[in-house]
Length: 122
Image: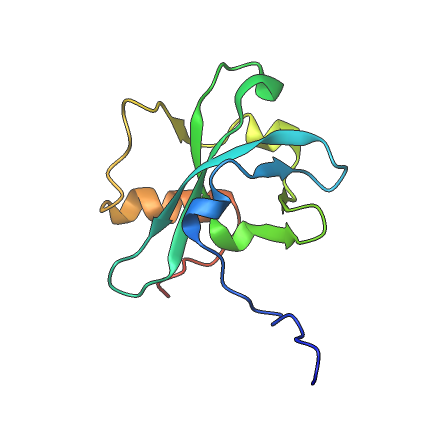
């Protein structure tokens, strides 16, 4: 019998991503993933909604971060976001009670531009 090897592009359940820590490359805890947003037309993950909370001294605020901005660290089960803390303080965010219209193309483009990522739909 051959031993089963891990598939390097192994899919994960969106529910298992919720609550996963987000850290920077220096292993500083930035917050955690609160939601995963999927484009129903393509099936692609558009955003991970992250609560950066206390480290930015802003109370808990939510941020739509392009999924492509993360690198997954499988050994620590955490997502690494390589964005300077000072830049994150200026990130476009929203409250849990007032989500932006994700159908607004300008809003989507602005978010992807902020994180210097190519929009997933292009």
